[in-house]
Length: 222
Image 1 (tube, rainbow, N blue to C red):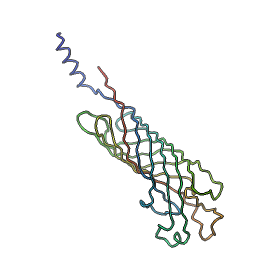
Image 2: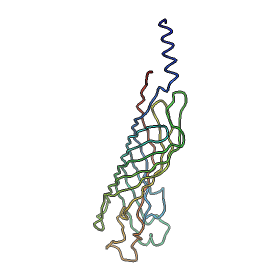
Image 3: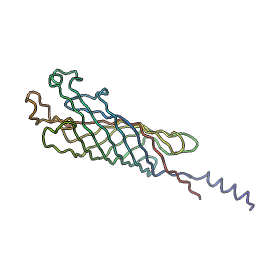
């Protein structure tokens, strides 16, 4: 067999198998955090504050991905910006910094895998578990725990821009187990009883982000 024939055979073999794998992915992004609780009973985009994230993703196959993320940001609320006479009479405001570390599973609705011949995309849903440390701007009203477990969940869409580069647009909610993100729990001695909030409902926060990720693509030879 001549050298040219060997070369053509090698090229044909490379093209006839799946030559690319993308197991590991890293990235980061920017977004906004929102809060829902006693000072803002409904989701209010006008109260959004800046946030950022770093992520590490492992893709064992085209359907499921596992991700670990660090999310940093802050949340804000103002009774005067709520269309409720109770909130406006109380007149409380707050700002709280949030640091979050999470472990998340993603489910892609479409087979998502880089292909040199077209740009891939897929919507996805995600859920997991995390730890959240929050720090209120004002002096805590009582001795509550600022290290809490959170349950992140949400939806997103990922799109292959070019080669190993992807963008992810994501909206996620965080179920918390505290009523003091706003430094305003049901046991607040600084407020009269008729201005206390409903401490039976825990506070929540949301993170909407746009991230850029990079896949470490390997080429396998047969």
